[in-house]
Image (cartoon, rainbow, N blue to C red; front, side, top):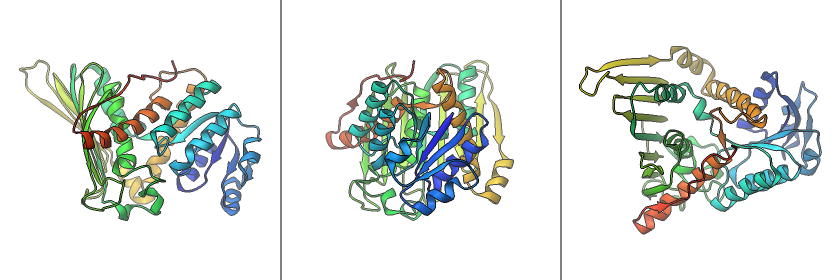
Length: 351
């Protein structure tokens, strides 16, 4: 598969390295407004460096990966679909609900694949939770707990990452967008959102520093959710799934899992802990980017499969991206109304 990259910054560079590592993909072109950045991104390859979007889209490509700020996603994705290309777009899918829906509509009109870069699904702590839930070892799932947070504004390298309109919001559109998707990943779908968002710490208009919510699936399965920019201990995220016969927890950083099971509701508890010393050492030596890189490799592999018609992989599709943005907007709406917001069941995009 010949793939082009739009945006050769920090994340785009990781995506490019991922394409080079995959034997089933080839870097065809790189588009970046900075000519020096674009040229550096294609060094050592046959790929074309472009600073003009039309020239980039005229290259011989099967798909593009969009790695730009979210306020640019809509125009770039729509243009790629108009050229008949498949798209893997970084999270959040857009900085607005309307933009996310327009991207999904363009993909459907073009009959092309749209995937959203929710690579946290491929992190070992989430994969292990998914494996244990699927195995049935914790029994029928009763509820889910989701949390993601970091210290806030000092974590960002650019103002657009946390300010409207470019960011689309605060904690929920940042670390929280991943956790929203993880919640939906385990609930199956989210059709009811009741929550409260606040701007009491950083006081950035339109960018919440904390958001707490209760999500419900069409079958009544519930999840509690918290996205935060006031996690003073540093980056933290976790998912906990509780069943009738136990629970399973995944957390990062550091990466670890906890499984608690019992053979019968009245039986004795058995605890299993899973640690990842090799990841901790690697991240100490090479930073968090090394783990992100590996998740991108798994995600790219499944993107190729999705384009080939395989819908059984964990990759997040366009509906996942759309719903995550809709949920963030729903929490704000619920904050104002004090009532739950009901969403349609959109399910899986590519069936």
